[in-house]
Image (cartoon, rainbow, N blue to C red; front, side, top):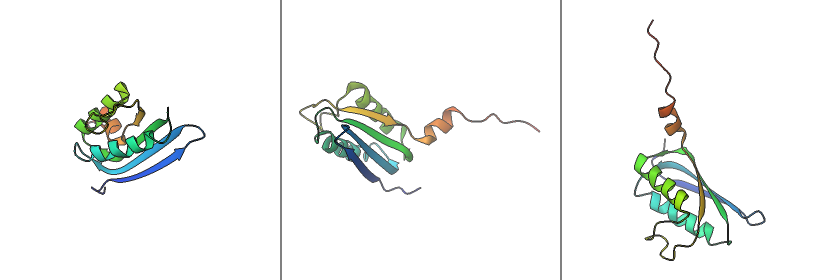
Length: 109
């Protein structure tokens, strides 16, 4: 998997939705770039729902916790958005997190 962060944004203003798709490696440092993209998308339309799809990215646990915290509080970190505009974020978790929680049991032969 590529360590660079690649981001694509899809916006549907008619339905007040935006999708931010990230691929690559999301770290505690690169998560700030995602926050900036989400902030820009959120500023396009009041009440816009933003879906952050990181299902095809490798995401560090601490970065994932930061994203979930923003999702729960409906605000981006103050260093990214000092005005603290409401931001409805839903995070689609990476597949790697699902693999860890549902690891298959080993069978002795």
